[in-house]
Image 1 (tube, rainbow, N blue to C red):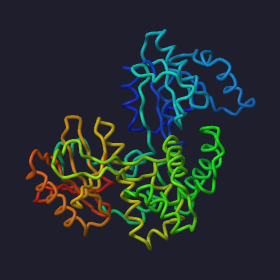
Image 2: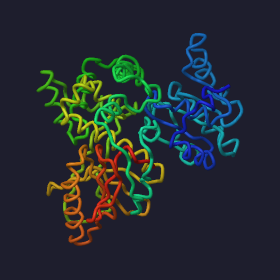
Image 3: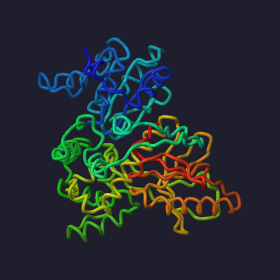
Length: 428
């Protein structure tokens, strides 16, 4: 009997991609942050399993994998090998077994961190397909009606509809609770317990084991708090350093910050939004900074001790957290149909919160606003940027303009052609 009870399994958007990858690869590796649901989803798609991190019998499974990685691969396929990175030689054993068997859908690997390349001899390209899994979007958690498909929207199609009133407290709750499957249904008072526990587990345990190096826990927490203060911004490493000095009166050196950022990224704790420039082809110089995000906005709230009550009194901070929520969801939805999420900033001070680039190279521009009273200004900015880019030599303007809103009760197309969609009505 697998971990996932098929009757209780909550469908995830990534399920379709897992099935597709299993048809085309000998093995699939599902990577992502701890507790985002990788094991449940992988178990749902597998017929046998081996849990490397099972603590029973003094971690007997891990010891067995270390002694003979190949021996743990025997079982009905697809066979789940959970948390393979605990014993990195498993990767090469899987790659070799896939080569020898010459069949698809042999293994599903899950990983909550990426080990250093030392010990992993081959990339697995062509044999092991990689998928990134994230915490639940609002559609997956049942908090979005799914009346509007992002895929359809990106091709300029929208069935206009009333989507229902949205309560500000509900939006704050979705952000503070996060998208962890284990946190669904918890009370507002208890919503931050899991994210706080998550951060403690990362600092005290996971980060200390990833490279076999004892990292400074206090300095890690200082950096994480600074990242939380700079959620949904393009803060540079220099800005993080000065921020830590200003807020915590502490000093970290640049190399330590770079090292810790690498560790956090390899644990999928961070999920930054890359800059977009590939298809604009204009003469304007584009800024190349990533927009900083945690894998889930609930972590930033937990680090800042931003309870629902505090966010209700500080809508400016909540605005950054709401943007992070929307961009998490946009990324999940976009990647399900082969699109990618970026942001845009140039040296003429033009910004676009979210850019979705489609497989055919077309791109769509999204502004994210909490209140319906901000829609007019956001639509005006999007139109101005589109028209400016269209005038430039070789400029390729966005094919779709859209305002993603928090407090809107309808999905519609404005007379100026700009779409307006509540985040609580969106799906892939």
